[in-house]
Length: 263
Image (tube, rainbow, N blue to C red; front, side, top):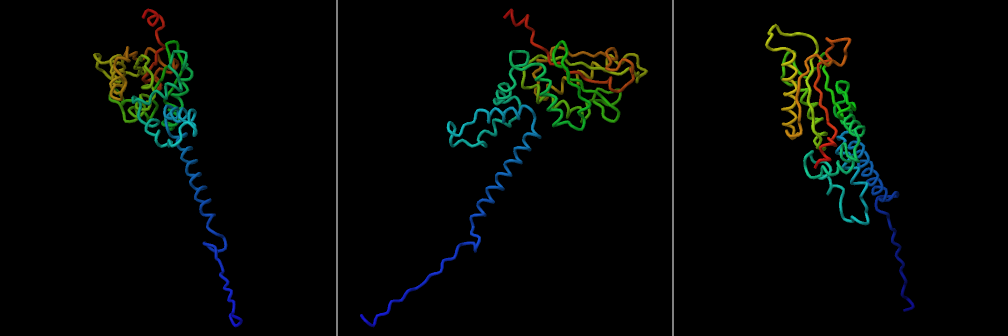
């Protein structure tokens, strides 16, 4: 036992990943994930239509990690981003209220439509006027040189007109108010045929807009008047030949309180 030697072996420990370790990779991955989520949120806010933003706002307004543990944001995505007319339209109604009732006001509806036009039709937003009038909220889709709703003398919708009507239909589908559709022309007489004048042309254009809105999901029962005014109601009275006098008007009507009271 006296000759026994005690041998001490030293083991040198090395950290995984070298001198800097590997923990920074986890932190970096978390940072990249957070930035991706942030930019996705920015994209949603700027690109989607107002009613879909309303669904997102409603979700986060009511969200609680304590009450809804285990529920992912993505589990709700189909409810927030499906198309108008489906069951989740209630989120839009909850956010904006009901037009003409104690909820949504004409001014709020006007602003919602303007936001949709700004975000989805920014390149032609100057062709869409939205204003509050005595009957309700009036949307005017006007012509300008090089960008028309209809070819000259025709009641055939252009591709641009269909694009505009699609955006408007997606927004006004979420409310149930009645609608007027009006057609207007300028004072230019394009035809020598006395049997087809600006009266017939304006009425045909209003009906073309009506048919397209119905195709896009607007219930026919909501459209209570379709009329052509020819050149009798110009936007610019001092310039009757101005192409901006050629337009389609969609009026979202206030509820008839007298009829409502009789029910």
